[in-house]
Amino acid sequence: MSEYQEPLYLGIAKRRRFSRFRAWVLFAVPLAAILFQVYVPLFFQYGSYLDLPLIVTVYFSVTRRQPIGGILIGAGIGLVQDSLSHQPMGLFGITKTLCGYVAASLGTRFEAEHGAVRFALGFVFFVLHQLAYWFLRGVLLGQAVDPEILRTLLLALLNGAVTPPLFYLFDKLKTEG
Amino acid sequence: MDSLLGRYRNITVLLLVLFAQLILLAYQVRTDQDVRLIRIWAVSAVTPVARVLEGARTATVHFFEDYLLFAKASEENRHLRAELGRLKMENQSLRSELGTAERAKLLSAYRERQPSRTVAARIIGTGAGSSSKVVFVDRGSADGVRRGMAVITPDGIVGKVTESFPTASQVLLITDPTFAAGVVSENHRVMGTLKGTGKPDCIVDYLQIEERVDVGEWFYTSGDDRVFPRGIPVGKVVSTGQGKVFKDVVVMPSGPRNGLEEVLIVLEGVHKPIPETSSASEGMYMLPAPLSEQQAASLPEDATTRELVFGTEADRLREHYRKVGEAQGHVYGEGAAGSRPPDFNLKLSEPPAAGSPASGAVAAGPDVNAVAPPKAAKPPAVQPAKTSPAPQRSDSAESPAQRTTPAP
Image (cartoon, rainbow over all chains, first blue to last red; front, side, top):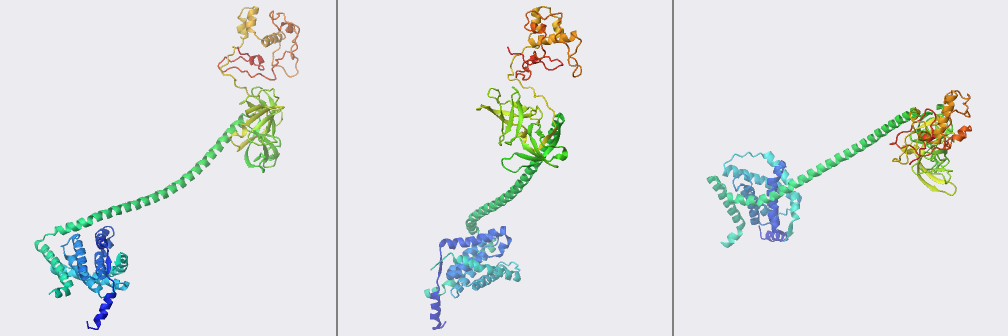
C-alpha cells in the first residue's frame, strides 16, 4: 500500500461502521443454528444440507470485522458442533476457525451488504469449509475421503442461496456501533 | 516486540487457536480417548433447549393433529348432521305415509260399520279467503256427490257439501260462520243448532236458558237438518254460560280433531240412535230388576207380594196389557202394519191387586196413548251403574221403567 493509497483506504475503513450485537444474540443465534443442524434433520432430512453454523460464523465474522472475534466465534461454534457429532473434537473447530478468520479479514475490506456478495460468501465459504474438512480428515486423521465435487457444488449453491435471506434476518438483530 | 505482536496479533491468535485444536485433535487420535468434558458442556448447553424445542414441536404437532382431527370431526359432524336431517325427513315422510295408511284403514273400517252409504274423499285444497272455512275434496258429481251431502270422519262431522263439480266438491267446514246443523246433547237430550264461529270452536245456539247442558257433555247430530244423519258425534262442550235470551254453549268439534286429510261423504244417510250416556256417578246404587214371571209365580198370591214383584206403575200396566193380550191370543210385536190391535178395554176376570193406584184406570179401560210413559221422548239421564246388576230387558221396545230406577 503506497502512501497515496493509505489515506484512501483508511478513509473507506473509517466510513465503515462496525456492527455490534447484544450478548444474547451472539449466544442465541449460534445456538439456534447448531440446534437446527442437530434437530431439524431428524424430521426433515434435507435440513442437513444446510450448514447454518458455518453461515452464522461467516456472518458474525464479516459484520463485526474483527478477525480475532471471527476466530473465536468459529472455534466456539466448531467445537460445539464437534461435541454434538460423532467425530474427534477439532475437525469442525479448525475449519470454522479458518472460515471465521478469513471472513473477518474479508469483512475489513469488502462491504457485505449486497445480496450477490452474500451469495458469493455463502458459496465460497461452504466450498472452503469442505476443502478444509476433507484435508483434515484425510491428512490428520488418515481417513478415506470421497470428495463428491458435484454434490459439494450443489450444496454450496444451496447454502449460497439461503445466505442472503439469513443475513437479512440477522441484520435485524444488530445494533450499529 | 510489542509492535510486532500487535501487527500480527490476528494471525498469532489464529495460529494459537489452530494449534490448540490440533493438539486436541492429536491427543484424541493418539490416545483414542474422547475429550468428554467439552462434550458434556456442549451437550448440557444444547439438550435443554432441544428438549424445549421438542416439547414445543410435539405440542405444535399435537395441536395441528388435534386441529386436523377437529376439522375432520367437524366435517364428519357436518356430514352426519346432513345425514341426520335427511333421515329425519325420510322418517317424517314414512310416518306421514304410515299415518295416512292408518287413517285410510280406520276410515275404511268406520265406513264398513257406518250404516249410511258413504264415499271416501281426500282433501285436495282449501278455499280462498282467510275467513272462509271451505275445502275441496277429490270427489264430485261423477262419484255421486251432490250439494247438501254431509261430510264426516270417524271422529265426527266435518262439514257439508256446498258445491259439487264433476271431479271435485266444495265442502263448507263446521267451523265456518255460515255453517249450521241440528244437534242434540247426549245426557239431557237438549236440542239446538250448531253454528260455526270462524274459530276452531263452535257454538250451540237456541238453547233455552233453563235447559241443562254440562261441560264435557257430547253433542250428536239430531238429524233434523236433513243433512246429517242422526247420531253422529259433533263435539264436546267446553264451556257454558247464561246468555240474554239463549244459553251460551261452546262446543269443540271432534271431526277435524286429528286433521283433515281423508273424509267420508254421506251419499245416503241412515239415522242412528243417540248413544247411551255414561253414568254420571260411577258409584251409584241401583235396585235389582223386578222378578221375572216365573220367579213371581213361585211367590204367594197376596197383595204384599204383588207390590214387591210389580213395584212400579209401569210394571203393573205392562202386566195388565200382557194378560189382555193373552186373553185375546195377541202377541205383541207381531202382525203386519195396520192389523187389528187387541181390545185393551177388555175386562179381565182377575182384577188387579186392591189398593193399586192404577187399578181404577185399568178397570175403566184406559187409553193406551194416555198411559204411555211420560218421559218417552226424553229419557232421563240416570243409567244403571256398571257395578250394579243389569236390568232385564224384554224383546220389545225398551221400557222406561227399566231406565228410570231411582237411586235410594
